[in-house]
Length: 120
Image (cartoon, rainbow, N blue to C red; front, side, top):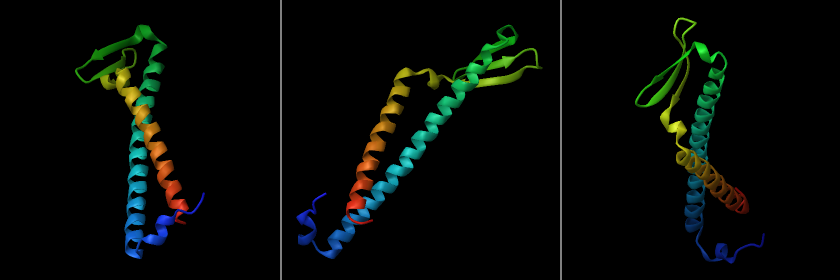
């Protein structure tokens, strides 16, 4: 990567400020990506739990609440097998989450590349 001439025409303070901003942005992007990844894991966990309810369907009951679907095993003293928030059935929300993960990953890659170019 060719060295940009902008570094020769800024003061040390300006360079330090720019570097500090880049470091903060990269940190914020890492934190955002971690939160998005956690949300995706929560979504996957709930669907995985829901998939386990298909065996023994005759001994299942479904409690349909305002915010979630609960699957209960009626043959084992009404044990809750799975609880899935209704938001996990929202295809548009899932698409947005996946797009946000992709976009944040790309932004983080660019930010880290910029920091590496500065030797950080």
